Image (cartoon, rainbow, N blue to C red; front, side):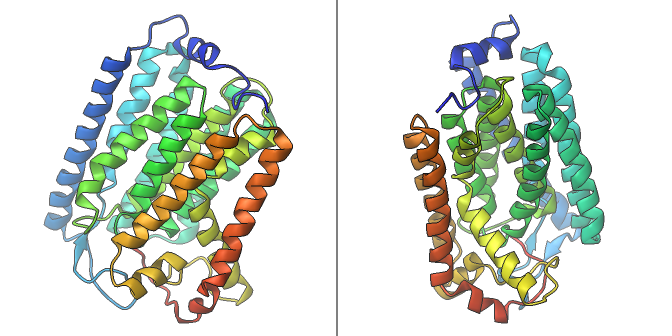
Length: 363
């Protein structure tokens, strides 16, 4: 198939640099270390703030945890990633406008999540803000790819990922670790330097959050963090697929959609079953496969690691087939998702939804 971005790495890097020198590996590594520290420090500060303001998720039959736990720790990831977007604009002034649009979208998604962490909002008000942020990401995609179809795909992907990461943030570590693995996979798949930088920065920021969230959560991401992770992954994927300024094949999107397939399958199939049963599908619940598995195992971290392992295998598959013919890639992607769907059904997750109670998730 053609290059994922329609151009080779050297050409993409030259476009990103805009004639300016990008930092070498030691400097880039130093910046990533700083983003890790910023995320870790922000998470620690968020925990102190949450305890002081009594922003705690208390145990209950509608929750997966057993001790009162602060929420809102994802603000540390948001702060670090705003810095990463600013660095990209600084290194390459040609990226200033798209990064400004992306940063605005990130602020919208994380901001509405931060408000929701303090006082619950209606799902529709959150969706409205998510839609505005998705429009901004669509503008970034149109500017990078010059095609309306890319913009529409970016809008849809952003809306889906923001909400999937919120739905799937229900046990310790699962949302942040999954985002880290998916971001690492995007780094390997992307040939556009902007996408690689954002994916690497996101992985570093998630790594800074995880010490306080895995194997036992001392603070949860909160809506401020889960929505931000979905938005940032959508940004990295959109830049990877459209950053070459040329038309991209469907196979490019299929490759990028393989690493997050565990979240896509569990969230979408659970949602579909709830809709078919006439349930209030827009409300949070505890009926996902990962939540049932955590209850059966009695611990969160084995399930979190199992989902991360799935993402790693899917990312490895995407990397292994990236240079194969488009038809092969498309068929492989379809087969992977069909196989995952069969495993989901075979697990009995759809039957377990009968006991799923509506309620606020936390993870």
